[in-house]
Amino acid sequence: MAETAVVADVVEIKKSEPWLSKKNKKLITNPLDIDNPVTVQILGICSSLAVTVQMIPALYMSAGLTIVTACSNLAISAMRDTIPSRIRIIVQLAVVSLWVILVDQLFKAYAFEVSKQLSVFTGLIITNCIVMGRLEAYAMANKPWPSFLDGIGNGLGYSIILISLAFVRELFGSGSLFGYKVFENLGIKYTGNGLLLLPAGACILIGIIIWIQRTLNGHREAH
Amino acid sequence: MRQSNTYILLYSAAITVVCGGLLAFAAISLKDKQDENIALEAKKNILSSVMTLNDDINVAEVYDKKVKAFVIDFEGNVKEGVTPEQVVIASEYKKAPKDRLLPVYEFRNESDPSKVDYAVLPVYGYGLWNYIWGYVAVKSDFNTIQGVTFAAPGETPGLGKRVEDAEIMDRYKEKTVFENGTLVSVTMQKGEGKDYSSDKHKVDGMSSATLTAKGVNNMLADYLACYEKYLKKNSAQGTALN
Image 1 (cartoon, rainbow over the protein chains, first blue to last red):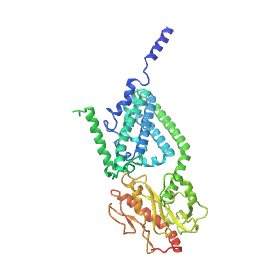
Image 2 (image 1 turned 45 degrees about the vertical axis):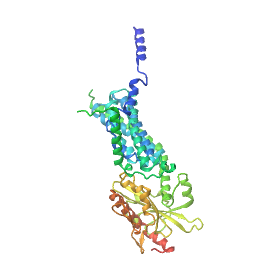
Image 3 (image 1 turned 120 degrees about the horizontal axis):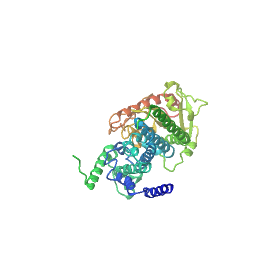
Image 4 (image 1 turned 30 degrees about the horizontal axis):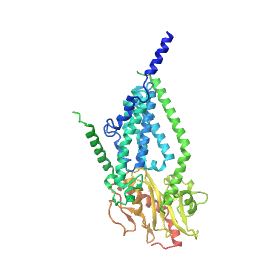
């Protein structure tokens, strides 16, 4: 009896999923396109309008949100069986806040200039719908590793939009990239488009991105 | 699964202790580095109100070489035994103007150290949403503004927070704070796009950020009044007030 039990265990291990199985890879790739948190789920719009005037803050914000989503997903998923359902939102909020404050403190210590530009928006990751959305929709019902990947995927999905927006806004709004005056150094006289520097410009750009994405994916509005 | 109330209470207590502990640990271990950044930032702001800073400049070195810092009282007399580093402007701001400790950062002339090239005065006030602060640098006549730097981390990005933009701060250059010996300060006007180059006490406003501009105006008027005696004393020794 004992021997069969051991054999059964071995078989089970062999059957277990590889770390980056097809299903797990989808957790990362889907949010980049067909399940994008910003352009498909329309979450996290506020910060994508606010911190995309320049590339550098956008990159830091992306990194911050990806770290927070992934780590919160991991922590909540690991705790999911012990969390009392009546106070689960509060517990999620405590975990998210913990990560956000840690990220904020690290920025203040090692990326002071950027933390000044991001100002309240690092703290506002706590209220970013993407983070809480992933916790409720995914981490509460799945194992830690897939949850971590799901967090990374959604963080990257948010990042890709943030960085695309920042690229267009900084290049055509201020004529520079990462603070490097692109047009000036190419010898082209370029007057920055002021609209792109305003949140309204970013809103229009997001609209255009959604339009392009929906056309490419053949999206139909559900009736 | 429905847990008992005891379980829920213990669970919340445990979460609070763990999260609190981790945060306290992070805050303490990163504090030195953060304080260093804040101190350097203050020096940088003081320097940048007077000169343009390049990226490769060593802020701490230039500051130590050029700036002589001390603390004065409302009457314009030097307060002995207090260094500007010990003065917390945020808590001084809450006192009555007459009781405030007022730091002054003087850029002394390199060939004649008894002469002041620029005096940089910290200012502190309240914008629309939160506290705002900055530095006002006056030239050797103790009247004409050499430059200002403002910090408004709590103001709305794109609206009131624009007061931190070089473009807005440059509007204060060459304005004067006195008119025939009376302190009138410099006020930011409502609306944007008008030319105030002929008016020595007005600067163009920020569209959609009139309330932040009001905060800035109050801050300047309030703090320049605190420094009025110091400014007058010094200008009496040198150039006359216009």
